[in-house]
Length: 124
Image (tube, rainbow, N blue to C red; front, top):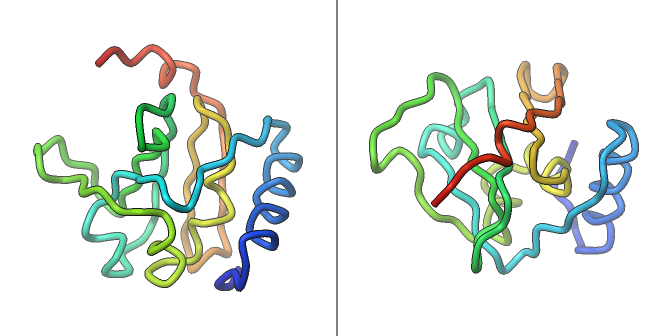
């Protein structure tokens, strides 16, 4: 998977991924935020992602690489529009609906996507 040159191509790729895994497409607007760990931006793999319901200007996505940490500063906010330049492997999966997870390994050669309804039970 490569960097997406325009928003239409990106949305089409996200819709294709959603169809492949039998889930609804729920847009994650480029001007909204995700929570991301520094090690994703450093190229560490595997990459894990999970999506809660959106809240305010956030998409509900939390993305990390390697080992998860419950440290309060593990996730940093990042506008999605910047993610395409930093790690384009993730972009096609951001249209998955809340309640889904993904795992990307081996430079994108291994991908797993699954539903995890417990993600919908999170209370602020």
